[in-house]
Length: 277
Image (tube, rainbow, N blue to C red; front, side, top):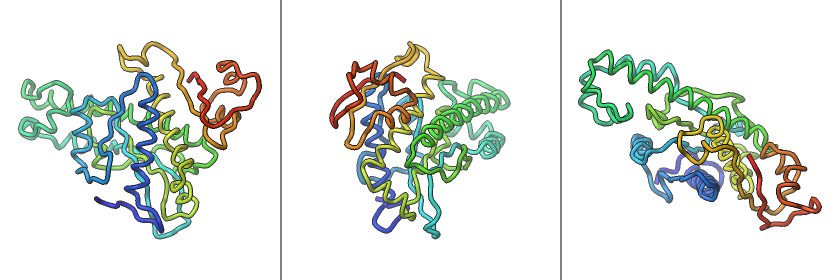
């Protein structure tokens, strides 16, 4: 029920849910993925519950999608955040044995290890190792998503590189997590892009491709992605041209033609093609 950022004719909660649903659909239709929405309707989920629900589900990644607003309408563009290394270090240093032992929420963040089996120094070391790995992997994921966003000619970047912040929703210790600001609904250009289905689809596609690139580089053992390169099925949308599709997916026009036995470069809405990525 929290509207989030408010634009002239847009609410953050509505825009981000539509982007998330588009991303969910793409992931669901791609072999090897099982997306789970933290919310699927107009429902407020507490910040701590968001990443804790992801932990309970055994998530391999956590992606939080947002839209921003600012008093100056000229401010625009997308950004990708990970949890601040400084903030995480302070948290680790401040954790006492009593906190680690009494708080099941914190204890669950250290994988399957129960800190009651370790002394305070060992427990803190385990926490720090798990947290450092999480942050490093979060940075890789953020970089992959940013790289894909920069390929989209309709998406401008507010921040060109990975940003760091102490966002509470990113505090899960062992799940790589990113927070994506899809744009500023207070900016006319961003608002137009976020309001339109095509613009939201492009954002969702950038996030998907970033996630896919991440798992190509860091596949989980014994998973579908660990077996090597895969193909995805893409449905042609109105206005699509092969050259732009090739740019978005990082392949060549000739590769798309060969993979799909296209006699010419003509495509039509609703047509499904295979792309190896």
